[in-house]
Image (cartoon, rainbow, N blue to C red; front, side, top):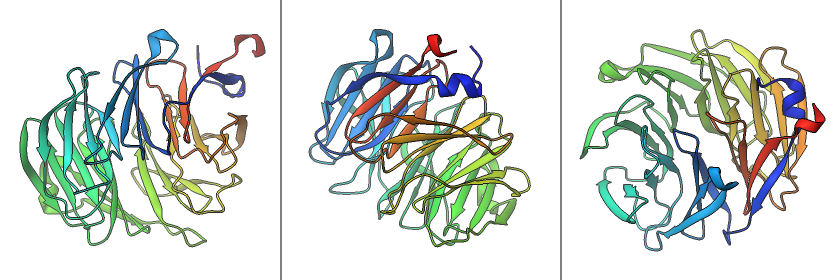
Length: 316
């Protein structure tokens, strides 16, 4: 099934799970698309089996360290990397099958605000309020490199794992070659919003041609990944409280989605720039997490609840 305007408009809530007792901090799908994971302020990590209607298949706890950002590793549905929101700012590599830490990655001296795993190997990058981006290898606890982008950065790998982008101090995009990051960015471009807001996330589209900037200010922006030219700025969704709402591309790079304060999901075309759908997920709180599955026609949205969506064939 191809993702089109009408398919997106047909999406309905398939399952809602109320396993967490506090706000969900992060959601991720496994590389094979068959599992999902969520992390929460209640210090729990919940696994979901998408082969069984997304049913929760296990709960792990990180009571001592807390759990904030969480990502599956690039080729494995049984290990994750996560950042902490208690005790310290060490990143942890966890086996989901036996609930044991495989490795620790100490180095950041303030909260980790971005975590991006290479799509091709064991490299990952993290950025922090300590104003650094660190490069890591899952096989070694030692930091492989540090870059100081001269401001607070949010960062992400491109789909080929060769380049990473840093959004610095909510005004500048810097592009780095992973193999020569110590030489500094090979390109940078400024993009200013017409209202005061913080950049809270940065993502590449799967075709590598666009960069999506999420903010806490009721607007998101799509840029040309090569020139920095502004392609679209999307408004018209509720975020009066300055919440860092997560936005995402659909896997075909043709649409951008974001949740909102009122529990709805808004969808725009990256081609026309037009809004094509507003989907009501009946979320009781703001949707701060949103991810589309890269392998299957489903996406997840989360507030305190975790919701999986499917297209309704009868509506097409």
